[in-house]
Length: 533
Image (cartoon, rainbow, N blue to C red; front, side, top):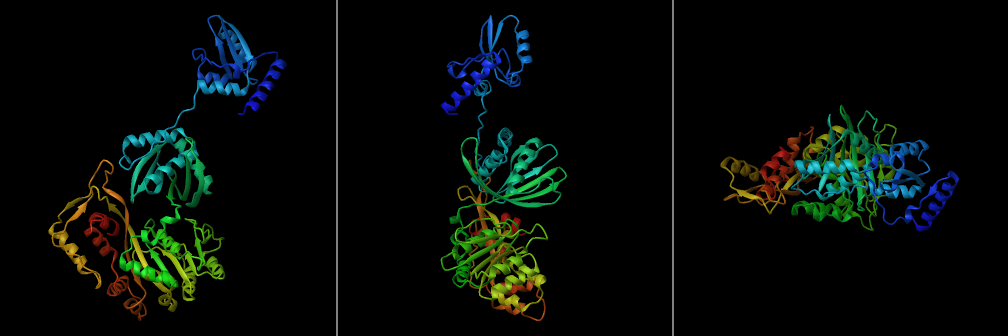
């Protein structure tokens, strides 16, 4: 409060004191404020709206506000019969100043979580205690801040009978971070639901998006950009929040870890942007990151780029991005929006996901008319994507002619080079690796497996888990050669037939890609088998 405003407040209080027939006390002039905690406890000061200003064995003077009742003052006279009790009117500002001395605001320590602490009982207790003390906005900002520091991909809030468990997914694996009370979670989920435009009373699963900047109690600012997924359970509403990195510089082809052969294929598509490019894989396999890295490379002054997403996950300068909601049957579909977008004469279009026959056919038609169409698709492998797409649209001459590239991918944890430990595989393991390497297509150099050393995760003070970050396992093929012959045959080909044709045309499978990365010491056999099977 400014000095002028404080002076006005005190003048108004002085006038009220004259009207009420009370003495007036200007607390701003009391430089040495003494606290008499033995007279009244802090809760009584709040409830009674009084402050003991001066006291000795014979006298006590209470500061009262214009909301202090006559009954309270009479009760205080009876309570302190051994002393002469006097009252003086003080301003509300003066009352609050004294209360900050009697009940100073708690200093919240926002403890940074390190990777070697994640999941430990003491850090879970410390983070839980912090979350119980702060307001809902700060709870969310703190969790997002720590999740970013730990390079987490998701924040999971899981309702239990007695509490709510908070876990971070770090390098594809979940780690416990905190346990919060159900009462505090109700406050937090209300704030999350309001920011993400979802309902806490819904009986259905919901999706939302939160994009805001929060200033925390310690003055730090946190950018919150989350995709929100909620689902009602028997114990409450569970929430998964996917974190997005807003740094456009992160989305570059050089940072995708493409092999020379894979990069050459992608560069060919970027140089001649037309046809349909499908990136397939399960949720959390990095499909959107791959597409955005391609889009960012194509985002030049010569190209008009439009995306259709549900929701828009990353915002890029120079790209026209359109949100399509598919929550209700009344909403405009991807296919309808895509047809409208094509009338805007784009060069490149990204469709967030191909989900139905109408969208698939429209995307294929757009790809045939000179556009580059990028999209994601849920399938287990590159070959399985084609059989699934064929199931959706049926045998269609557009199918083979429109598709240009199919890329499937998974994420596995990368070994920490500073603490990984070597070992010599047994004969059974070596024979299994040899069989996979022998199946590599021509044109890919086969590694020498004599004196082969593999690696397993070690442990260090900074990294007890032995992994650091993630790498992508990929398989991809262009729609050419043997693959086209199989798809244009007189029957519907199986996944195995398509995969065999793709391998004969030079495709390295995800398993082969994973084994080559194991041999190179980038990850472990267990990681590859955990993710691929």
